[in-house]
Figure (cartoon, rainbow, N blue to C red):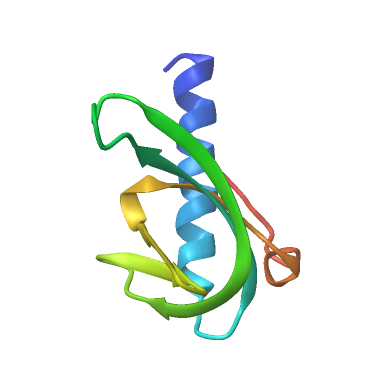
Length: 88
């Protein structure tokens, strides 16, 4: 396994751990990829801060009025995640 694969696996493990503790009412910041309506092969990254209004780990996360597909989430941050110790 090369360094890039190791890094990507570690980042995915971190995100999976964060998704496991996510709950309604938490204040978080999410970075996600939004595909272009014209061409789904391109898009932009967005970062949104707010309160978790709905979370279904198999479908999507709603922060305030914005729904984000789980597979589009790149990172989650916030005070609630500061206590997580990541071990790979």
